[in-house]
Image 1: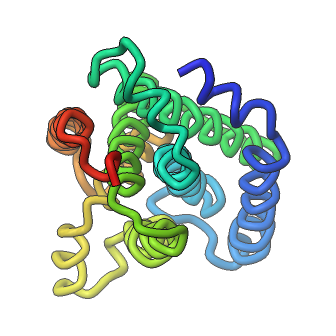
Image 2 (image 1 turned 180 degrees about the vertical axis):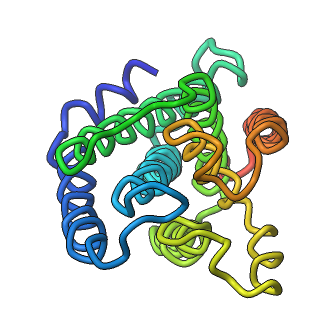
Length: 246
């Protein structure tokens, strides 16, 4: 875990600068320029409504990218055997990859919150839910990244999973709009998107109950269960040598 954390801490231009610049643009264009015309959504300014979704987008993208890249790069350059042949249990191996990647997601989430604080007054109404959701979703996507890194056959696989699967789900998960503005059919279709519950959970932590479309309690239980299940799957895949012995 220490090795994985040092890998991205020592490369801040690759780790922290891209989400910093991207979110400055998001807040400037969507929050300030469009936000002045949109006004308020569910009783809060548009730029403040936008903040939790951008935190989720940055946190899960970086969690997934870190673990998937670490696993795949180790396979590609054939140094992951140094880990798999070490006197560590498979559980320890998986937790090292997952927790180090989740930490990166948390750091990016904090960074985005700091950027948002430059543009608006950031409030935290329910700190327990905010911390719980951030931890659960970063662990979940770090664990999914391990699966992706083991499954990928080349670097294009990683790009496809992140750009064409994760990001569209997040963008249609209520980052830039409230589900209340959707027609009835699309409202219920949106409820099938798991990102809706993640975005609303973090939004509940920041803004409180008035700004969310779905309640946080059931979502937190389901997401926690999913995170534990995917971590368990990672351990099974490591134990069986899936993608590690090719």
